[in-house]
Amino acid sequence: MDEKEKNFYASAKPTVELFALFQRAEELDVDGLGKAEIYERAQRYLIKNKESVNFKSLSKKQEWKYDGDIPSSFKVRINDMGIDMKVTDIIKDEYAINRVMTPFKMKITLLAYIEHLEATGIFEDEWNKEETKSIDELRVQGISLVLRANREQLEMIINKLMEG
Image 1 (cartoon, rainbow, N blue to C red):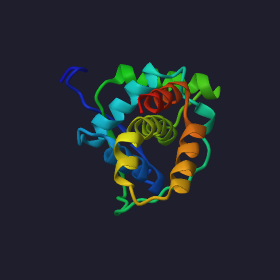
Image 2: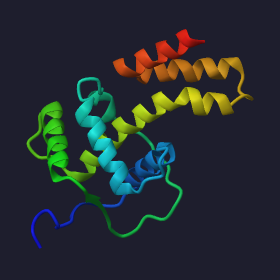
Image 3: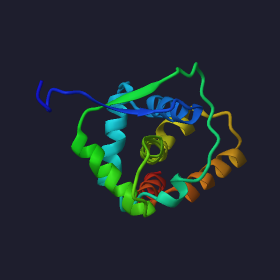
């Protein structure tokens, strides 16, 4: 079996945080992909948009809830080692570290992707189905989105507001 045929996996200690991040990414992803494909999509997003990602906010401690059982082990297939290595290099540079642990890399990558999905999908999905919310609740939600948005997301929000 040559290297192109060999499957590579990223292994991490299973935690509520990691499973919650994957669960949230799966909820937001419109194509219903599996963990490996969602993780690859998140990695591609991070590589393409590294200049607009707010890495400082991604590494802050957040509370996550996961609906499900946590297995005793966890691994995600890596479809493209070149992409995975680029993500590792980006994280090393952004955080000025020599070694990137897999759980940290997964967390940062998924959080960046989730923030992007939430910002780009919030107007079409969440606000349209949340008709029962009061105007004050919508204002608070809108302000919260703007405060967490990066440049690309702010431009998208402005364009949406200009449309109508």
